[in-house]
Length: 164
Image (tube, rainbow, N blue to C red; front, top):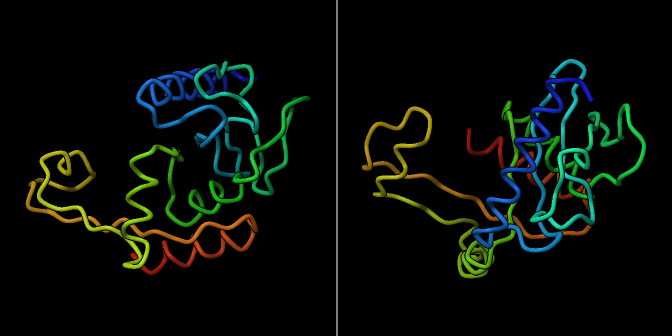
């Protein structure tokens, strides 16, 4: 790993441990990624099948825009790598933090028929880029889960383009 990738991997491992401690990443659920470079696209990402509370920096994978491992042996890319790649490409995201907390699962169930949940009036919204007041609303879309990752990536891409 290059020094930049090593630092990003250490950061992802630290975030994974913190999220695990909060109950947001239980066991092997969820995955985290961060952009290493945009051209050609390289993403540091937590591997499949690793307990996020035990994730070590050396386990973090470097993947390309086709979700293939680059420059290292071992590990298996997450099946959800295509979702991370799509979000990075659609929104220019620098990182994707995909959690499976009990709370977001419950909210997804409760608001699935609405297609999402509206969050408004909270002081913490000022932590979002460009938001200066709690008198703000954000829409969090909910998409139906699927094991067909290419199709789910397309759905996520469409959903993200609608909200621009």
